[in-house]
Structure formats: structure tokens, C-alpha cells
Image (cartoon, rainbow, N blue to C red; front, side, top):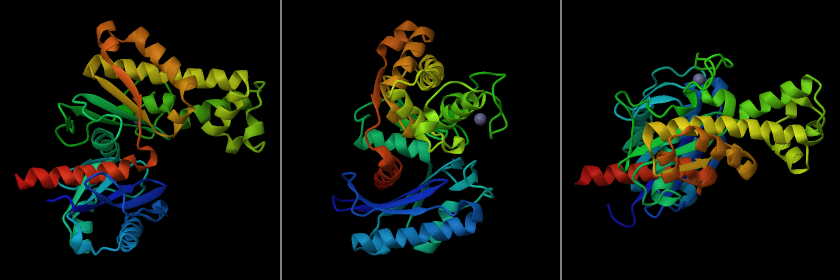
Length: 327
Ligand SMILES: [Zn+2]
């Protein structure tokens, strides 16, 4: 591997596919964004990934043969060892798909597979808010909650490779039912989806609020952004719902702090864009619940790579694996 090495990062999401040719500095030489045909099943999604890869390569003006590797960051449970995607709540119809080998065969380039939240953690570690950290957790607050746990500079993958599913730790054993089959998971209480659900419930119950004014008057269009806008303009209910979601974010943070004693927690994802209104109640709840010494030693940071964290992180993983195998 030398300074001019290039890899292809692929961020496979339930709604979009992001593909980029990335250099060793973490810079994107090209970037292709397309819609995931998730409802059409694995074959259509894989085809869309291949087409996106071709566009990213031609945009960068290089051939597949010039790539050192491809790395796919994918949602759900997968094994980096076998390259199999077992299951994914965001990709209906996927069961034990040997995604790594399929892409490797079609592209003729060494291919790797990693969990998308782990990819985001590596992106922040090499090129973002976690540079130099040894023990940290990267949390993505979005439609769900993703997590990447880094211990001694390495992703903690667990025995099968499925570790880090922090969004599915139980926060309220009697809470709402989750897609994973459990009840009261963290992401059922502290994600963007949870915030939207709570806002809709309160509006339906007849609460006095201006939230609908920011959602074209349509309850189905009430999203985290609408609630945030209403709160910024002084809506009491919107502020209360954001504070409550923040509180639940903090309950989960306290658990993570007590279990892992991280030096740093990086928080990203669309919901985190709400900022202090969400995060201050989160830090407060975490401080009240976690062991004092562990809480006092943790630093909180906002993710720096935004929507590109997954694709850049997948590329970072590829570079690191190439380097390891060349030693
Ligand atoms: Zn769950």
C-alpha cells in the first residue's frame, strides 16, 4: 500500500446507497448517491450497489482494477469474518446473504463487509471527532440508534460479529414493542422515530401545540425536524417532547458509561442535529445515573463526518485491513 492507494467505500442504507472512491487521507474523489430499492429484495439492491459503484469509479476516472479493496458498511447483523449479512430490519427479505463474496465476484476486487455503525465509528476514529481515542463509543441517533464500540483502538465485534447493537438494550422492560421482537428498546424511546411517535400521540390526544404548523398541517408529516422548529419558536409541548427524548438518550448513555467507562462518546445522526435542546437533558440524566467517577472522566463530542461517516469509515476499515494483511 502506498500514498496513492484508493479504495471504494459503500454505505448501504435502508433508504439510500452512498458510494465513494476514497484515498488514504479519507478524502472522497467521487461520491454517488442513489435510492435503495429495498422493497424489491436483495437481488435488486445488489444490482443497484454495483451500478452505484460503476458511477463512482467513472466519476473518479479510475477502473475497478486500480482499487486496493472495496468495503461495504451494511445495516443489521453481519459477520466481518464470513462476509455474510444475516438479517437487517431495514432490508426486508435479506437472510444469510453472502454479500461480501457476491460483490467480490462481480467486481473482481477484494471486498470486505462491516456493520454500518461500526463503519461510522471507524470514520470518526481515523478522520473525525475520535482521532487519537483508544476507548470510545460512537452513537448514531437517527430513525434507529446505532452504535460502534471501540476498545483499545479496535472495534469490539463480539464472538459472532454482531456486538454493538446498543439501540436494542432494554430501557423500559414494559415499553413499546420493537421490530427486533423485544420491548422498550433504547431506540423505541430515544430515536427520531420515537420522538415522532410521541409527538403524533400527543397531538392525537388533543394537546395544545403548533407542531402541525411545521408539518403542512398533516399529522403524517410530523417529524423530528417539525418538532424541533416548533420548539425553537417557543412551543411548550415540542420542548417537552425533545427534553423527554433527551432524558431517554441519557438513560442509555448512563448504561454505556457504567459498562464501558469510555474516555469519549461521539454522538451523531440526524436527531443529534437538534443539539443542546436534546443533548443537555441527555447529559444531565446520564450524570445523575452513571457512576460519578466514570461520568466525570467521559468527554462528549458531536460527530464530525455527518452523512459521510459510513462511507468514509468503510474506506478506513479497508485501509486498515490492507495494512494489517501486508505486515
Ligand atoms: Zn429492539
